[in-house]
Length: 362
Ligand SMILES: *Cc1c(COP(=O)(O)O)cnc(C)c1O
Picture (spheres, rainbow, N blue to C red):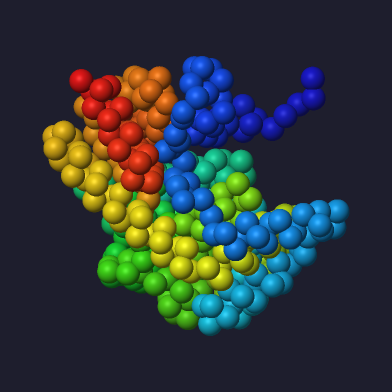
């Protein structure tokens, strides 16, 4: 046997939400809905589909490794320099690149828990350690707790805003006060995967902070509100110098050409994004009301998913809902044993979920 790195033995593979096809096959069901991975229930922009069909004629060619057109379009949209962007096969891949760029063996990173599980995985793959500060009682990030956990070994702080799985936000004011107190030698990653759902009100416009703070990286994605999760494309926004470093560890053709073409077209269809956000808001109100009628506690959300306390073992509720053709996420993987996370779907999907949940909970 070839000797592998010690750390690999202690890593657990990512457990994704169950695919629809697998549930159909295993349970012999024909009508299955997936509200497990925070995908866009409206699909994606028809303009993106059109761009994909056009792209098929170029499938034999390598993609533009620089994502030039998309880079320029985003730079224009945000009034930034094209050199301030880095693209990845999902923001997932950018998390890896950040870890590869900044984490030496023995370094630590910090986040709160429960939050997005990839922060720990990418840290540990680099032989680093992640400190998990518990979320506050109101399920929000404990920024004071994070500040207290900073040591000379701290390289990165991961802020998931809004937080997956609780849907809570760090406000603009809180984030600003926090950044003021973080030493400039510590990188702060602002994971804004759900930006389009959250922005407005108290949510930070982090791009405005780039001028003042040279230690932040903002992460956005086309997977959620833009509905392109299957194509894998996300991006980082930061200072040219930071992006230049990250770009050294990036693979030459890491973002495929289909994803680039679709993302460019999707960016041009803000009407679709708006419709997605509006559908989500309506669905949110419907689910809130249904949970209230059922006497279930839920965490008010700034995203396209909701955590709800079903007061029963979440793995059991997950299985029972699966039997009814509804895939959700059990909270046990987030150490919230009696909670489930449900993606807000179309009105029809939301109704079907609530009906199934009522039957399951009796
Ligand atoms: C979905 C998600 C991502 C990753 O999205 P990609 O599909 O890899 O772009 C990153 N962070 C959080 C918190 C997410 O929920």
